Amino acid sequence: MAELEIHHEGGEEKHDPMGQRVGIMAAVLAVLLAIVTIASHRSHTDAIISRSEANDKWQQYQSTRVKFHSLELGEDLMAALAPANAGEKLKRYEKDKSKQEEKGKDIMKEAREKEEATEHAEAKALRYDIGEGLLEIALVLSSLYFIAHRKLFPAVGVVAGLSGIAIAVAGYLK
Amino acid sequence: MAELEIHHEVEVSDPYGKRVGVQAAIIAVVLAVVTILSHRAHTEAVLVKAAANDNWQRYQSTRVKLHSIEVGEDLVSSLATKERGAALLAEYARDKGKYEKRSEELQNEARHNEEEGEAIEKRALYFDFGEGLLEIGLVLSSLYFIARRALFPGVGIVAALSGVVVAAIGFAV
Image 1 (cartoon, each protein chain N blue to C red):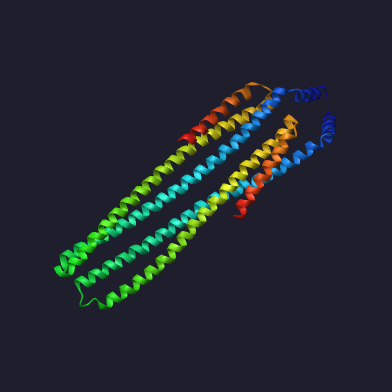
Image 2: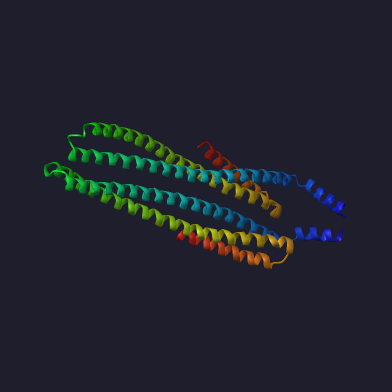
């Protein structure tokens, strides 16, 4: 009985080569959808990690600014309260100030790079998200063929799928 | 064999089943869109919260600088001679005003970021509920193909419509 059933269905499938093609297309779309979904999630996580690294860099930058400010204050106090003995220390403060200033600039540059990386990752994620949505729509429309037996569904599905792939690839290349 | 044939015939001549299939497909598309919106809202909330943290940190640095100036002011006014201290004290007073203003601005920015983060999370909550209801709608609609009972897609459509409404409220929040 079971054999008969298989034979019967197999025979029907042979009469519907379009159905076979749509089935393969849906499977390919499902694989691509899985890849784009993972890429989207990874890109969002990248954005959060970059933003957290940018915060860390800005914190380091603020520390160098506070140190710089403390040195300025020390300089003022030395000059105001002990001008006779200040010479040596003021030289050191000046040197330290330059060092902190230089370090602050470097850290600020790194922080800005991390912020740009965050924006870049989010721009990529947006494209992956749109690609994911279109691929999802393509998969559903293609599957509809098996219920409605109308070619229109997989045809629109192909368009949505190709658009989804193009947008996801644009995200990858960005 | 007879059973199988009947099964085959039901599938072929089941217009209601076709409608349920289309219904499930539409729910699946809406579910995909709402799921993506929910994920994006959660990520945005985390990024805005990070921006708030950053602004609070800048605020704290400004307050530390202000505090250092106050200490300097006290030391200069207590220990320095009048002619040496006057210029410094005037400069410190100017700096204090500057840091006070800056810290207030940063505090406002940080609070604004926090409020924005909360609003986005609230929106994400609606998307999450919408996603859940749409998922229930999809599963119940699909159950028709196993149980062949119209009750499942009936309840499924109610759940899905509720999900769409809840997700739409998320946009309005």
